[in-house]
Image 1 (cartoon, rainbow, N blue to C red):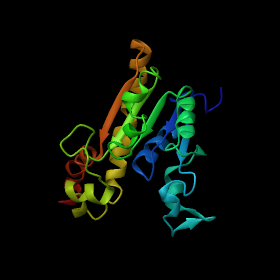
Image 2 (cartoon, rainbow, N blue to C red; image 1 turned 180 degrees about the horizontal axis):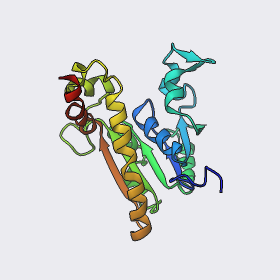
Image 3 (cartoon, rainbow, N blue to C red; image 1 turned 90 degrees about the vertical axis):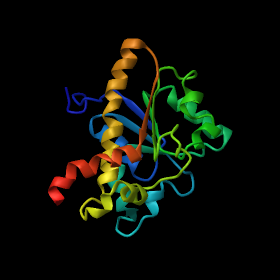
Image 4 (cartoon, rainbow, N blue to C red; image 1 turned 45 degrees about the vertical axis):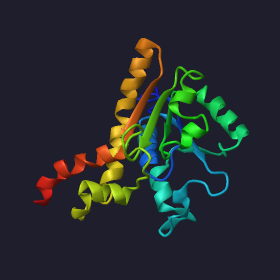
Length: 211
């Protein structure tokens, strides 16, 4: 038995529709645990982090490389009907779908959990957002610096990556549990992960180191 087959997520296939850092860090962590990750990127510019230079290596952004190892990328426009058809085709052969678009983006394309669960009843759907999908602030966009400021993380000089790491951990930890639930109950499952909730964890855990 080789090392790959001995990893905890060996045999699990992830459809990664996320971009920038929070979602890609989550799926990278899952790939490190043996999952196969298929990353969907914009057909013209790719993931936004490809343009975050310098620093770079071999013409590729360090930001992109740091969050996307061990993945296979597909350039795909799911604004187009043909692209959405391919997404559904891939979802048929995947165990987990992860996305981190603004609230409403996936729903308008029929690719949110409500639009996927009946067609793909086996699929575990992980939705990463800034403030949750049903909260009073669900429609507000949110990005790492905003969430760090709101959670008080900017007062910690060494916490630039704290929000991203918290989201990565909070997103990836429930997924194996959801897969066990699917095996037991035979149904899909949606995990909604608000980044604002994730970032609020870190001041509690790092404050003793600061003060």
